[in-house]
Each structure stands twice: as structure tokens, then as C-alpha cells.
Length: 346
Image 1 (tube, rainbow, N blue to C red):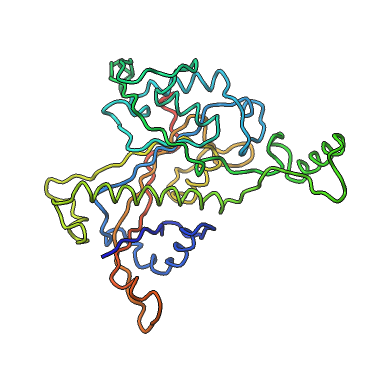
Image 2: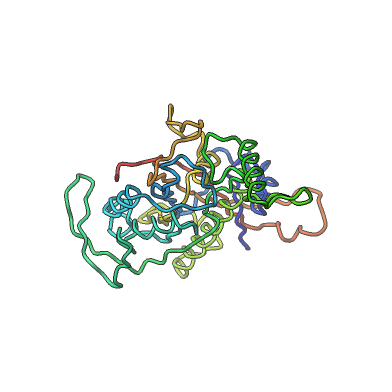
């Protein structure tokens, strides 16, 4: 049987193709709300969502969006501190990353390279091969670990910050209208404004747009993890058999695919609200603007838990597409919050 990969975890639709498929399957989701009746796969994708280090724009309370700003000395230093943590750097037995990703924006890319040990705080690229570095264990004791520098850091624009339109480059206290007014005034003063022309402003992105990017990324991870898992199990199990592929009893343990993702506050915040909003702790901290507070270099860990189900033929419906859905296996998933805005490594 063929397999399809559909994100059916969120109740709201998105503008992406994944989101449209998700919205079309919301009625089916209602039948699967009871986790006890679900056949979860023997693998889970564990997302380690980390915000970039402090930037000059952060320090000056300026909206960045998809603009960019260099890291401050503090931002670089704390990225270096994070690189010492065996529970975040991915270089010890405490945690090994299956995949490592970063936004394509400089502030995120630079932070990721420092945290993963690909670059030191002075911007020097580490030599290939293995080095030794002192890190701290859970009890604060120093230990020496081997650093594996063969990390393939994937630069993925789907992890970039939300585009914030005319407010980019201005103080956070300015409204959309105030920022537009200032852009118009600046264009007039620079003799760039003509009545028959539009002012060029940075792209503005909706929450749905950003969530669409995120679900596309998560969906690709689920599909790749499924392919990897079943490929590794080839010859051990009949991977087309749902019951067999979801069996985790006896001596078999769940396989965790740890994924490092260095991104931005608004995108991570969007993912948290869409994925695990109901699981957030009570009385969580807010920014001055009333948004979920995610400190620079904080870590949020969320499990993506796939499960198998079969699409059913819809009664008397006939015509194109019937053969494609009859008996097909659909891989859906749910989310589970493990750590929220954790800064214990700093």
C-alpha cells in the first residue's frame, strides 16, 4: 500500500498545500482524538527549537523581521556558553542530532555555527576531524568529550523570521500606520517618491503564511524519518503491515530522531501556539507587546509523534481519485511539549 504524509495536528488551515490537505481531513481527525486508540509509529521526531543570540536590533528594541542585524558581544558569548552544554550542542552521547538546520538569515546562521561547534566565538572555523572540549554534565561537573565536526548544517529559508512589512527597521513601539508614514516621509525627503509610483516596503507575511512554511518543513522531516526508519528495518519486518510497523513491545524501543533548528522568535512562537498551545505552562512570561516571551538562545523541545491510519472509501462517491485513497496508509502526527523556553544551559 502507498503512504501519504499529512499534518492533521492543528485545528486551523494554512495557505500551504500541506495545510489545504490538512483542512480537508479535519473531519477525519475528530475520530482520532483519543490517543489510546492510535497506532503510533516506533519513531518520533524531536524538534529542538532554539532562538538566535541577541542582536544589536534586539538591544535597541528594533523590529527585524527578514532584515538582519549582527550579534552583540553578549549574543556571541552566550552562544559560546550554549556550545558547552552537552544537552544542546549535539556533540556528546547525551544527544546526537539526526539533522541540523538553521534559518538563512545571518544572525541565526552565525549562532548555529557557534552552538554546534563549527565556529568559535571569534569567527574561526574549527578544523575537521575530532577535537576535545570540556563540557558540563547535568550536575555541573566538567567532562571531556570528543567533538565531531562532520555536522551537516542545512540552511533552510523555511526557518527564517516572519516578514514584518513596513515596521522592519523601526522601533517596536511604532504601529503599522506610523511606520508607513515614516517610510513615505523618508521617500519624499530623498526625492524617491512620485505620485504615480508606490513606495517599496519590505514584505509582510501573515501567521498563516509562516505556519505554512513550518508545516512544509515538518512534513518533510516526517517523510524522511519514515523512509529512514523503514529502510533500516527492511528485512526485519513487513513495513507495509501497519500493526507490525507500529509494534513497540518486546525488546524494541522507540527511535528518536533529534532535529536541531536555529530560528527566530516569531516563527518559533507561531509553531508553539499552533502545535502545543494547550500544553503551555500557566502564567508564562510575555513581552512588552503581549507576545509569548522566548529569550535569545532559549530552547523549546517538541515531539512530533506520527501514527498510521487508513483512509476509507467515502461511501457512494465515485470518480477520479477513488483508487488513490482506497486502502492507502496515511501518516498523521500529533505534538507533545517537552521543554518550553528553557535557558538552563545559559
